Length: 600
Image (tube, rainbow, N blue to C red; front, side, top):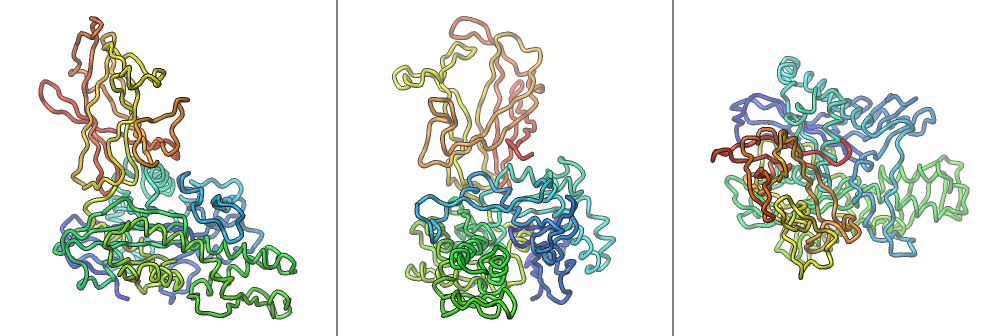
């Protein structure tokens, strides 16, 4: 298929945009050479070490083979040594970076579960002595280096263009809907270690992040005929079913010419990707072959690989029997339906490996739609190519008049190409907050209302008794445009004249629990379940020295006060902050650093 070509001319400065999607099982890179006055094209890197030149496949296995803690092979070449005991292969390492809230599966109980507790996600360990930052930086370096070679070899004057623009090129990294600033900070550090940028300040400028959901909507609309149904007011969902996560986002079309989209509500991100079907089948096989000589780990692993290579990709629930090729002609066990190295599974056994995962996806999309008039669900992603998943989604939503729209491009990775399209198109103009964001604030203590919270109270410099509460700044589900700003007023009081103002620090909290809450902590002073530290804000206060005022408190004592404001905004879905104050009536502003709480 020909590369995507934009329908509008590029008006910015000459540059290169490189979009990287590191998936749980497969990864890909797309890029776009942007030249003023030209129509941007998006191309995918389709030549990788170890892959046949004629394959035309942009997806590579997300694998790194280590020997004595040093990376030896990546991608397709690493796949060749999966069974070699001389190598330790890092796989599914994206799961290690998931937030804690995503590391406990919310899937329904597995087929053989005797309780209603969700099973923990089994994350393959990293090779001994190899930390996650080393894994990610190595894979980023490999992908970026291969992209450089491909660009130089396949673009007219490619080497000269790359050398001229590399230090200002934009790198777009795709992340699941459920990731946030902590994972972004980690990836910036990985890019620095990989040599893609020379400093973290450069990373702030050159590295962009996009959710897999938003990247996928740009990809889906670029490869879908929308003329007959995409009208102002139309709502549609995009579901990106990947290796470990399934990201679903609901959009409303605000205008067609130009095309403008807004998120309708907070997006969904669930642990229900294709790898969990592999794990479910592994459990089924281990149970089935418990008394067979072929129930050993190596044989079951080969059966699962055979399933992943073929059966999982074509199963649509119409097959009576499914055959997995795992051994040689002398491998027989008729009692367990094994003949000449092939095991025969029934339709029910294979379907069982899909059922729980697909049920979770259906529930997630139902939660997203909440009875809204959605007529189309655009299904993309590697697992989105599954005939079984497509069939079950159609059965679940066709009665509501909703059509499942798929894109037949199995060699492409939706997020990587969509992210490159996104950079120049920017179709989504408003996004919904996934959590309620707020700060710790002090309100005047009310003896009648707050009696039981006496222990939380304190006396400020002005002699006013206050109580610490959760002040919600951005309610969950709020639809925020790039122009949106939230201005909060604050002050700092001093009992003696401050010779040094030092620095400002504040904490942003995220509430994911049900309903609203007034509190950050319980009576034991521990964060409430569902409340977590999202990030910290830090700024230099020294420029505010000229704005210090002297005041008299309620207790008649003199104190000094500095008034200031924090201005929060979301630009391209990333939180930004500025410090604002007034000096002799003139508004001043300064920078605020946004720091992850860990992972940096």
